[in-house]
Image (cartoon, rainbow, N blue to C red; front, side, top):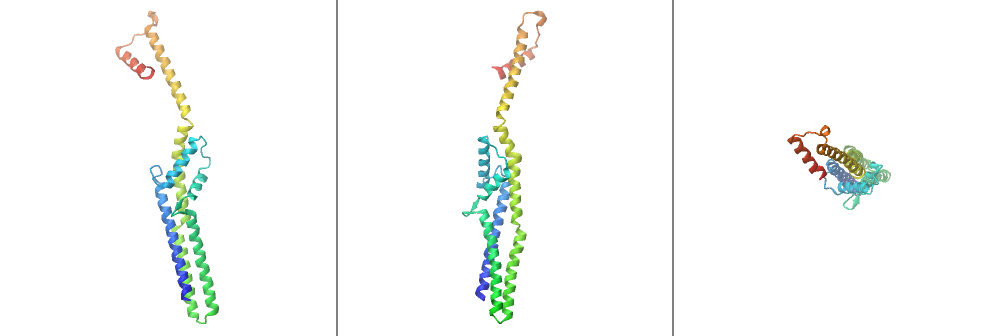
Length: 223
């Protein structure tokens, strides 16, 4: 009976440690995602590189949430995927609960000492109750959602517009600049030709300051 009680306590302790470790991982990831543009965390750097690569290939990313979820599921800690750590914690809780029920049923049927059976039952209930309380306090699912929000906010509202301007709209901006400076050059050429005309009616008198400004513009944008 004592051996079974020790097994339940050991399973409960391992389960509690795993859940604490998962919570610690998420807290670190949330902190890094809050400064994603400057983060040196491997997951954040990988997300940004993959995201940028999609735009460099001029494909873009239609569903950013699925994109993030995919690479978040591929993240590993100590060689084990993050979601596997979560599954292990939940599985150990189930095993602990099952072991407690089976042990107490066995004791209730085979042992005549009811006080011993009651003590074992209370121990099992206490262990499982503490694990449930830990799960409620840590709220791993909420932390995963907070992590997703931080990453999605940066990728969609900061990084995506920047990449779109750099990749998809760069040609448009170059064409706009080219047309703008061509128009400016045409106007300056017209002013210059008007200045040099020999017809008195069309002649324009420039001050020394105006001539200096025109020459400076011509040197900067035309020459």
